[in-house]
Image (cartoon, rainbow, N blue to C red):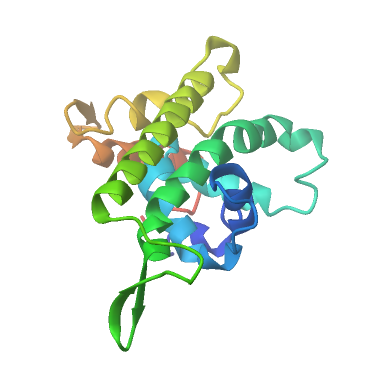
Amino acid sequence: MAAVDYRQYPNLISAAEVVDKAMTNSNMDASIIDDNIILIAEITHIKEHLGNYFWGNLRKDKNESNWGNSSLYADKRTLVNNYIQPCLALYVKYEVLNDMQYNTSSSGVTLNVDEWSEAVDDSDLSVLKEDTFRKAEILRKDMIEWLDHKDNEGVFTEYEHNDNIKHSSGNNVTRIAGILAYGNDLNYLTEYKKHKESNDDGFVE
Protein backbone atom coordinates (compact mmCIF):
# COMPACT_ATOMS: atom_id res chain seq x y z
CA MET A 1 0.00 0.00 0.00
CA ALA A 2 1.29 3.45 -0.91
CA ALA A 3 2.23 6.01 1.70
CA VAL A 4 -0.37 8.55 2.81
CA ASP A 5 -0.54 11.47 0.38
CA TYR A 6 -0.53 14.52 2.65
CA ARG A 7 -0.37 16.82 -0.37
CA GLN A 8 -4.03 16.09 -1.07
CA TYR A 9 -4.95 18.45 1.76
CA PRO A 10 -4.89 22.27 1.56
CA ASN A 11 -1.84 24.20 2.66
CA LEU A 12 -1.49 25.43 6.23
CA ILE A 13 -1.76 29.02 5.04
CA SER A 14 -3.55 30.68 2.12
CA ALA A 15 -2.15 33.24 -0.31
CA ALA A 16 -4.44 35.91 1.17
CA GLU A 17 -3.14 35.15 4.66
CA VAL A 18 0.45 35.43 3.41
CA VAL A 19 -0.30 38.89 2.04
CA ASP A 20 -1.96 39.92 5.29
CA LYS A 21 0.83 38.65 7.54
CA ALA A 22 4.00 39.23 5.53
CA MET A 23 3.62 41.69 2.68
CA THR A 24 4.18 45.43 3.02
CA ASN A 25 1.21 46.33 0.82
CA SER A 26 -1.96 44.64 1.98
CA ASN A 27 -3.54 45.43 -1.40
CA MET A 28 -1.06 43.17 -3.20
CA ASP A 29 -2.60 40.75 -5.68
CA ALA A 30 -2.60 37.41 -3.83
CA SER A 31 -2.84 35.47 -7.12
CA ILE A 32 0.90 36.04 -7.56
CA ILE A 33 1.41 33.56 -4.71
CA ASP A 34 0.86 30.14 -6.24
CA ASP A 35 -0.30 27.23 -4.06
CA ASN A 36 2.77 25.28 -5.15
CA ILE A 37 5.05 28.01 -3.78
CA ILE A 38 3.31 27.72 -0.42
CA LEU A 39 3.70 23.94 -0.55
CA ILE A 40 7.40 24.30 -1.34
CA ALA A 41 7.79 26.64 1.64
CA GLU A 42 6.03 24.16 3.92
CA ILE A 43 8.12 21.21 2.74
CA THR A 44 11.41 23.13 2.82
CA HIS A 45 11.08 25.11 6.02
CA ILE A 46 8.34 23.59 8.21
CA LYS A 47 7.96 19.88 7.50
CA GLU A 48 11.50 18.90 8.47
CA HIS A 49 11.05 20.44 11.93
CA LEU A 50 7.60 19.04 12.65
CA GLY A 51 8.16 15.63 11.11
CA ASN A 52 6.27 14.21 8.14
CA TYR A 53 3.51 12.59 10.20
CA PHE A 54 2.73 15.60 12.39
CA TRP A 55 2.94 18.02 9.45
CA GLY A 56 0.66 15.82 7.35
CA ASN A 57 -1.91 15.42 10.09
CA LEU A 58 -2.01 19.15 10.72
CA ARG A 59 -2.89 19.61 7.04
CA LYS A 60 -5.50 16.85 7.30
CA ASP A 61 -7.06 18.17 10.52
CA LYS A 62 -7.15 21.76 9.28
CA ASN A 63 -9.28 20.52 6.39
CA GLU A 64 -11.95 19.12 8.73
CA SER A 65 -15.26 21.00 8.74
CA ASN A 66 -15.17 21.54 12.51
CA TRP A 67 -11.54 22.71 12.63
CA GLY A 68 -12.52 26.28 13.46
CA ASN A 69 -14.80 25.59 16.43
CA SER A 70 -14.18 22.12 17.85
CA SER A 71 -12.36 21.85 21.18
CA LEU A 72 -10.74 18.72 19.76
CA TYR A 73 -8.49 20.93 17.62
CA ALA A 74 -8.03 23.84 20.05
CA ASP A 75 -4.33 23.21 20.74
CA LYS A 76 -3.56 22.58 17.09
CA ARG A 77 -5.40 25.78 16.12
CA THR A 78 -3.18 27.69 18.53
CA LEU A 79 -0.10 26.10 16.99
CA VAL A 80 -1.18 26.81 13.41
CA ASN A 81 -2.61 30.29 13.90
CA ASN A 82 -0.12 31.74 16.38
CA TYR A 83 3.11 29.95 15.54
CA ILE A 84 3.17 28.17 12.17
CA GLN A 85 1.40 30.77 10.04
CA PRO A 86 3.49 33.80 11.13
CA CYS A 87 6.79 32.14 10.22
CA LEU A 88 5.36 30.28 7.22
CA ALA A 89 4.07 33.55 5.74
CA LEU A 90 7.61 34.95 5.81
CA TYR A 91 9.04 31.76 4.33
CA VAL A 92 6.52 32.02 1.49
CA LYS A 93 7.49 35.65 0.97
CA TYR A 94 11.13 34.58 0.82
CA GLU A 95 10.32 31.92 -1.80
CA VAL A 96 8.11 34.16 -3.95
CA LEU A 97 10.26 37.32 -4.05
CA ASN A 98 12.14 36.24 -7.18
CA ASP A 99 8.87 35.58 -9.02
CA MET A 100 7.62 38.99 -7.97
CA GLN A 101 10.77 40.62 -9.34
CA TYR A 102 11.10 38.66 -12.56
CA ASN A 103 8.66 37.46 -15.19
CA THR A 104 9.31 34.34 -17.27
CA SER A 105 7.64 34.27 -20.67
CA SER A 106 8.26 33.24 -24.27
CA SER A 107 10.26 36.44 -24.56
CA GLY A 108 12.64 35.27 -21.84
CA VAL A 109 13.17 36.56 -18.32
CA THR A 110 12.13 40.19 -17.83
CA LEU A 111 11.64 42.56 -14.90
CA ASN A 112 8.16 42.99 -13.45
CA VAL A 113 7.68 46.76 -13.45
CA ASP A 114 4.94 49.23 -14.25
CA GLU A 115 4.88 52.94 -15.00
CA TRP A 116 4.45 53.81 -11.32
CA SER A 117 7.33 51.80 -9.89
CA GLU A 118 10.98 50.95 -10.37
CA ALA A 119 12.49 47.53 -9.75
CA VAL A 120 15.23 47.22 -7.13
CA ASP A 121 18.63 45.92 -8.18
CA ASP A 122 19.87 42.44 -7.32
CA SER A 123 21.81 43.57 -4.26
CA ASP A 124 18.76 45.26 -2.74
CA LEU A 125 16.67 42.18 -3.48
CA SER A 126 19.27 39.99 -1.77
CA VAL A 127 19.17 42.19 1.33
CA LEU A 128 15.36 41.93 1.45
CA LYS A 129 15.44 38.16 1.01
CA GLU A 130 18.06 37.74 3.71
CA ASP A 131 16.12 39.90 6.15
CA THR A 132 12.87 38.08 5.37
CA PHE A 133 14.53 34.72 5.96
CA ARG A 134 16.10 35.95 9.21
CA LYS A 135 12.73 37.01 10.57
CA ALA A 136 11.14 33.72 9.52
CA GLU A 137 13.89 31.78 11.30
CA ILE A 138 13.36 33.78 14.50
CA LEU A 139 9.66 32.92 14.51
CA ARG A 140 10.30 29.29 13.54
CA LYS A 141 12.75 28.82 16.42
CA ASP A 142 10.23 30.40 18.79
CA MET A 143 7.63 27.94 17.50
CA ILE A 144 9.89 25.00 18.29
CA GLU A 145 10.66 26.37 21.75
CA TRP A 146 6.93 26.64 22.41
CA LEU A 147 6.31 23.10 21.15
CA ASP A 148 9.12 21.78 23.35
CA HIS A 149 7.93 23.63 26.46
CA LYS A 150 7.39 21.30 29.41
CA ASP A 151 3.73 22.34 29.65
CA ASN A 152 3.18 21.00 26.12
CA GLU A 153 4.55 17.56 26.94
CA GLY A 154 1.96 15.02 25.83
CA VAL A 155 -0.23 17.65 24.16
CA PHE A 156 0.98 17.10 20.60
CA THR A 157 1.44 13.35 20.58
CA GLU A 158 2.29 13.21 16.85
CA TYR A 159 5.27 15.51 17.36
CA GLU A 160 8.64 13.98 18.28
CA HIS A 161 10.98 16.87 18.94
CA ASN A 162 14.09 14.88 19.79
CA ASP A 163 14.09 13.20 16.40
CA ASN A 164 13.02 16.13 14.27
CA ILE A 165 15.30 18.80 15.74
CA LYS A 166 18.37 17.29 17.31
CA HIS A 167 19.05 15.00 14.38
CA SER A 168 17.80 17.12 11.47
CA SER A 169 21.30 18.37 10.62
CA GLY A 170 22.71 14.90 10.09
CA ASN A 171 25.46 15.49 12.66
CA ASN A 172 24.03 12.97 15.11
CA VAL A 173 23.47 9.25 14.88
CA THR A 174 21.10 6.88 16.66
CA ARG A 175 20.72 3.11 16.49
CA ILE A 176 17.21 1.83 15.80
CA ALA A 177 16.75 -1.94 15.76
CA GLY A 178 20.35 -2.40 14.74
CA ILE A 179 20.21 0.28 12.04
CA LEU A 180 22.35 3.39 12.30
CA ALA A 181 20.17 6.39 11.38
CA TYR A 182 21.66 9.75 10.47
CA GLY A 183 19.89 13.10 10.30
CA ASN A 184 16.59 13.06 8.43
CA ASP A 185 16.83 9.27 7.96
CA LEU A 186 16.17 9.06 11.70
CA ASN A 187 12.89 10.94 11.32
CA TYR A 188 11.59 8.45 8.76
CA LEU A 189 12.74 5.36 10.67
CA THR A 190 11.27 6.57 13.94
CA GLU A 191 7.93 7.35 12.30
CA TYR A 192 7.99 4.01 10.49
CA LYS A 193 8.60 2.13 13.74
CA LYS A 194 5.92 4.11 15.57
CA HIS A 195 3.19 3.55 12.99
CA LYS A 196 4.10 -0.04 12.32
CA GLU A 197 3.53 -0.73 16.01
CA SER A 198 0.13 0.99 15.82
CA ASN A 199 -0.77 -0.83 12.58
CA ASP A 200 -0.88 2.46 10.72
CA ASP A 201 -0.88 1.95 6.94
CA GLY A 202 0.77 5.25 6.14
CA PHE A 203 4.13 3.67 5.43
CA VAL A 204 5.11 1.00 2.98
CA GLU A 205 5.98 -2.36 4.57
